Amino acid sequence: PYGEISAENPEVAGGRLDIDGNHCLEMNTGMKPIENIYWPKVDSTSNYHPPIGEYSVYVKAYSKHSNSMEQEANLTAVVSVQGKKDIYHLRLLPGKTEMKVGSFQYSGPSATRP
Image 1 (cartoon, rainbow, N blue to C red):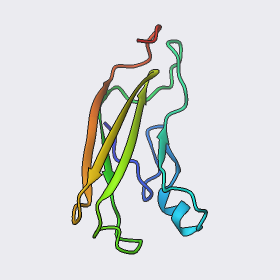
Image 2 (image 1 turned 30 degrees about the vertical axis):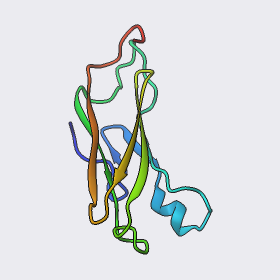
Image 3 (image 1 turned 90 degrees about the vertical axis):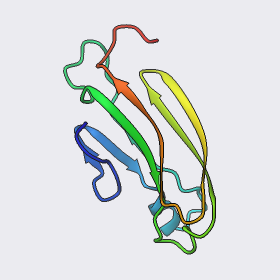
Image 4 (image 1 turned 180 degrees about the horizontal axis):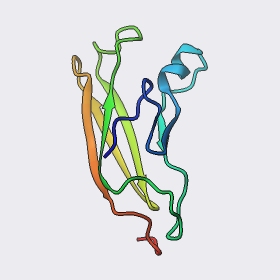
């Protein structure tokens, strides 16, 4: 609802990018390049929660690292909202730089988990 969270813009409306996959590759840690975006945990009594609205989740490939755009890439995206986890297994085809994973509606904190 308020913008895009990315390495260039790591915090929006309380949501934060706390792990950047490019950093993992640059540091040569041997870790798989993962990214993690989150909002601090909230409950039904919290006045501070993510903005209500529709959220879209995308994966983007950057040409920063050797031949990352010339090969297909198998990706796993996990979207967790209010205790409900959806796991997506995707394949980004050669030459493609972006793919929509999915979208979800956030209606605010709820008193009970689904």
